[in-house]
Length: 381
Image (cartoon, rainbow, N blue to C red):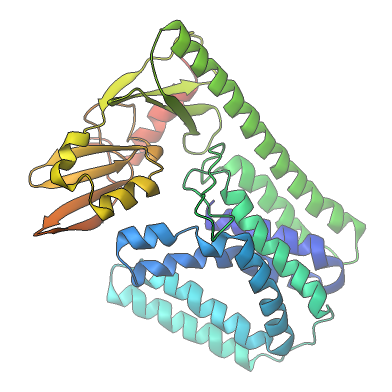
């Protein structure tokens, strides 16, 4: 999920493990550990878009990584807290720097990072009261809960690396305020309470409980949506091999539907508030013929695996557009509408160059308009 949510989760887990003994330091280091797996985005500066996306939610999101890093971080923390904190500050800054478009912004970010590192090393260090084993448990739980949460989203998380399977349960959107905001309020309140207070522990577990209950609710909503869609497909006598559902942004009421029907997909929205019994589908051809001689190319095969074999191919002039179907289209489904996540395949002699297309907006509509359309559709039809 988004970085803020992972920070909040890591902080709450850190507090639950060691908060009574070390206070807000447990929240700080839990939040840091909860962010570490997503530092794999730095691969974008080292590799091409295809390879970088293959690595995302790979080894750093595995049980193996959590098991190895937890004792390493605990040892490092007990030996030299300042250097560990400084390294993390630099790595986080680099993730922002690689996304900055101007050298001015990059220079400012680097200057801020240098200032933070200087302050860290000049600050007098207080002895941590937690043992190395206790810190190891804090890092373990704060690290491993990150990929466990990500498994509920769409991208796919290689939890059991080095095994190739990626888990994606598709029951919550990558940003969902109903999960994050109550959780964040509880963690924020905890920071102002005495570390030995029973109320502090109660409020922290309240935040964990509310967020967990909402996660269970999203799973229940998905089951209801799947049942309604399957029943509608049967009533309409639609032949298909499989279908999948995913929540739309910021909610668990409106779901996107992708139905694999052979040489084409049937796309639709389904709201749990719909009063009409039938789901209205839009046909979109898979366009596999647009791959031409590149159909068996190694990079095309890798893209297919990355998209979990949910993709549509379109021809644009001399280039090929590979659309990842899992992230849907902009606005209501349609045969000619742009997709949220796409790659440009550019033939170069006997090879293909793969470029990530920045998410584009639907023609004539801004994000505000798109969200208004989603809100109207969420209320049912």
